[in-house]
Length: 248
Length: 265
Image 1 (cartoon, rainbow over the protein chains, first blue to last red):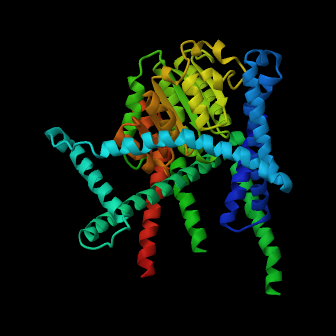
Image 2: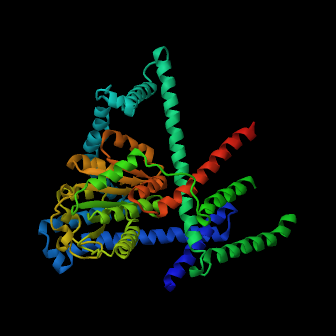
Image 3: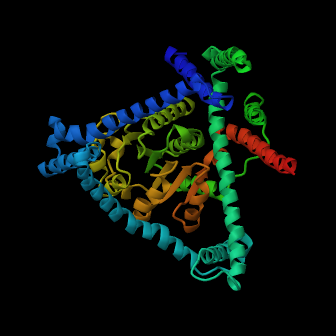
């Protein structure tokens, strides 16, 4: 196995155990890992922005001889204007020029709203409504496959939940019945979301444990076992040193 | 002390299935996972699909198994793969997954898989919505070069591809925003492209509505879904292995919740 793979495994195990050490107690090792993680993440995102965005989209099109020939002069002007707009965002850090950043923000908000709102109405509202108001099928096939029950459930669910959040009239009479149905459905939905979240967190834990198990093998020089023992020793020594102070 | 004991118990329960290979039951594919599998099976051989890697290291354990199985499935079906990312954190993960799966596929099947001809990775572009709008007009306005700096229009795989409309299927490995909802909103509904996705457990329930409306042809949810999909594809990888550990972990949490409620009384 290559040296860099083994080194990578040891680094990975160290930081995994360092972050997990918070479950036992907060320590210098956890804080070290936390700060390094933030620094590395920022550095990584910065380098991706540099090499995957600024270099191909700005530098290549403006200054590279081959790249600048492949686009029209008007396109280059647009790129320069976009760069100026981007730089104006940093004007927020200069109190006297702070107002300049609002121009770019106004453009971004207007542009995004223009793109997003019409398509959101189409994809998220009209598509959902048209499916909800589609005629319910009572064919033998639909009934036996459970499609009819599903359609009825969706219909009852949508109507009752909409009425539950209809605050313009007092919840009494028919509205009490529908509100109770809505409440049950909302609770089931929230329970489902909670269950899914637990499953998601366990998947993340499995990912880390799976790596720890892989790196505990002889090909990685028992990285997980060695570092686990060192961590236990570290906590044992630091806690035994502090004990006399606590008694005092 | 109780909290630490619970953490230790969860860790032990999750580690056990990794050292002692056992199964706690047969994995049955859900309708949404079957839809995902069938959408890939439906693509004619030799077509080209677009795959977007939109996740980060935090969601890697949930999405990576499906991503690996999907690339394998597409290669087995002789479907060409054009990949890209809307997340700046995705390129390193995408390159690792694509590189290792193609190598593994070559080794096991003996078939030569060539970069630029059978698959390519275009890389990350910032701009979320505007990138997709741009791709709808022309791929080359967004990606003049691929991740490795090669000219996109010179790649053989891109010969018949001009815009999003030229892909019969779009696959998103998406952990949030931009992700499956962004693709539905900006591309697949507009250009009438079949769309499937692999996502995390946290957002999976909220995407079920798009399965009902047909905006999503199929979806693989987290590691459970990955295990189901691996069974359909006929491979035994991280997803299948993870299902047992996660099922045991969930069972433990259910027991702890019940115990917690009883003991409180």
